[in-house]
Length: 340
Image (cartoon, rainbow, N blue to C red):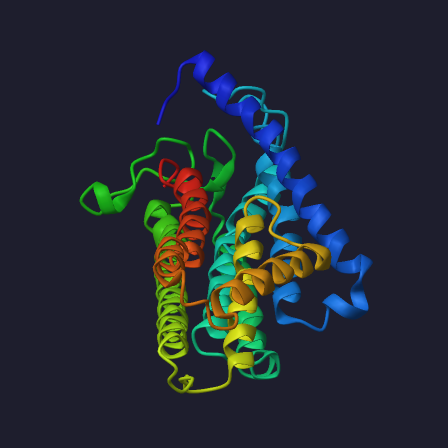
């Protein structure tokens, strides 16, 4: 793809700015985890965040350098200042950046395991978390080293990545099996096989997980409202108090974790973290709301008013999850839709 001089200049400068913001944000996440290491390092959630932030710092630097590492004199490139070596190094870490969307997918899996399936931290750590880290590291660095060994990292106009050399050469898969590339033949295929396919797998998986998370909260919300209405009805007419399957404390604990998870999801893009004070505040708000919804029986003089209030507020949590999940996924789309 060719750009005008003005377009090439603008597209070269923008990553310098956005890269700095990304490095700063991810560095804050790393600091937050390390500043309370003994407490936060025990939880899979914070270890997944820490892993994603570490990858993001390195890869944001690679993207933020933009066209500077491209060899001097490269045609159609604004401000190329590098050498073949700097171009290769940048391309390596650009390819390794596939780890970041995959970590986002793993975080969505973590939320789903906690909220929908009620899996505790110990089981997540033993059965799931280790494999998440191993898989991401293997895929990110495995594909990056393949590109390094095959000599695929060349000038790609906006940065160095998989590309044929010389730039603009005809690749055999589009030229009846004949290539004019000295290096990097068919690298466009490997862009999809090694990067874009996994990227959209992560986006689709995250969207599915967010939908299932919303469904789980919606179901719990409906059960809570149904129990509350039965409680009100039984109290109003002097009957016995109905009991939900499972304890009320268990239900409240589940909803508390949902609220805490919602807050974490809301801060995941761009800050990706929420401190313990925010979690505690969220839990306090939920305690108040839960107490309002499941308090002692209402007076018989105002059953309709309380029922109307229940009808108005019963979707509060699920709506909050829906919009937080929408914003969480929207960041993926805005970042990658046009680039891929």
